[in-house]
Length: 176
Image (cartoon, rainbow, N blue to C red):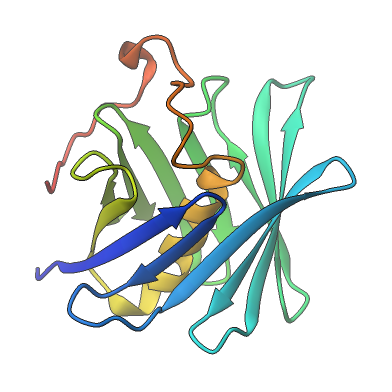
């Protein structure tokens, strides 16, 4: 099992992912407010729109929901599995994906219950995020899921969403 490393940079409402040895952007995302909704657009290296994401909060269930639309017309929903919004799940054509939010500013991404990526937001000054992934072919989905959770956040926000890290998910298989 050889892990591949990537870097994600964040500047206000824009994320970019690239390999550390190359300066070419693999994917980028940009989020904005439109008619009271928070929307994000995810582009590939050629600036072609790949996904559009709409962030919503379901009040009657106290859960976050992300409506994901591909540029070819397919739509799916990334939905929180608990009221703490620490576990999210989505069904895509290539399988079932799950993202878990851990303490110490880490996130894990699973495909069909196998860990395929881990994101560490704590290693740097907050503008650069480290990503370890098992497979290059899933980097677009990994970046999509991470971008969903970052919609509406910026590097200037220092407020924590949760008051206690005891409410976050335990990282049973840490890579960092």
